[in-house]
Image 1 (tube, rainbow, N blue to C red):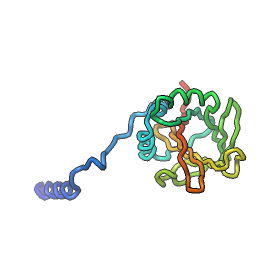
Image 2: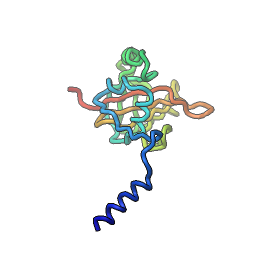
Image 3: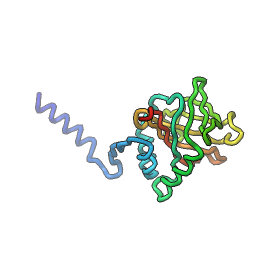
Image 4: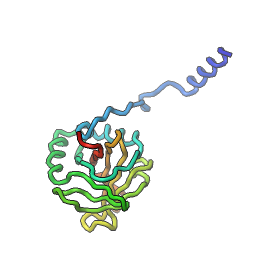
Length: 176
């Protein structure tokens, strides 16, 4: 019996073949907060997003940081400057979200569960189409990368299809 089990295990292992460099298994990075996400490169951010689940949708006020041109020397300073303008999002009970801009609530979007434009898996979508005259072609989507910490993607609808323009992070955890 033991020999048969070992043979079956070896047969399965051999049938699967050796691991190749083309299919590396990359463990998700340890993400403690928004600063960790802002310091990641684009490939790391996209990999983390693909590995993450939608998780529990945030509710109420979230703190936010924009992530432009991830991995460049200017990503962190740009994120700090943009934070002076855009502080995050507020999720309401009526299926809507509103951005916090310059300390005020502005630019609403509908919130729903939908397929990600990056990989098709479920994401929480914030769609500005029909709710914003300023950004009618914009769509955000987020996934929870750590309890209460979200990674987001911002797309603009183009004639040629959606264009991923930047990333952002939201923190719904209570402040310490």
